[in-house]
Image 1 (cartoon, helix red, strand yellow):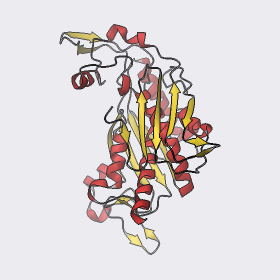
Image 2: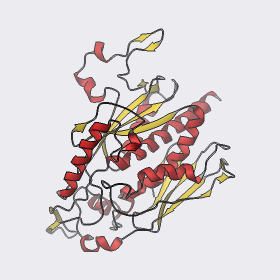
Image 3: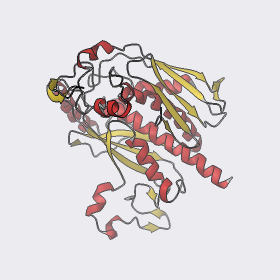
Length: 351
């Protein structure tokens, strides 16, 4: 379907529905000879999969990856990499009672208006389950970046207005919120549990850093690196905003404050977030994304049915009270895919 492919020289195409037989991805443009095992992909998928903690959906999907092509004897072959994850805990019957009612915050209304038909089983292609394919594709990009000396790391910066300002990259996987600030993580977790207890959900902010990226990636005008990164992360269903470096704070700064002055040793600040003029500076690329509260909540809400009648709805089922912990590896994946694509575009430019 149009819109399911991302990238230019390094591309991913995701497929599958939330409660269909399987989801997955096809990766095209992988450099041949790069070490890649199913375990490398599985490690990333395990960070995204449901049921991993008390503050995520209890849906019990193992998300076991099967590499069908493009890898031989532990190395990429340069041909398309086809990866599939079979759905094991789908329960489409949970949506039968509300299949004719539009869920607030979901794409039910817009999908039906666009296509004239929609898969009501857990949102179909609009489901967050689609991102499993992105994470699998991102694992390939991570492997490519590792050989280049670059890496991407993300973490939950805030939940429901509760922010952590210490950044310790070593503690991210040691708490269920995936925060880089341990004391703040406890408060964030409590906030999420409170929202779940009320039948509600809560949003937050995820920050992502790309480290070891050299200067020179990105193209002027329409193919700026930050523009492509913005599209990459904004294509994630839960993301409603993105900023780089100082971001929206720049609107309240003076030019003398925002400009990143330079010395013989390099830049003195990083308000630009590692990208100037759409091209990487060699500093860490820093971006933040606004993650909306999960749309599926059990509180009663007003809506209409497919005939336009006013009704109420409760979205019962197994849902995340906060998307941030599981969206971290998705953001990382989309950033990694974009960077590997630009590395290849830069190489093509210089022969």
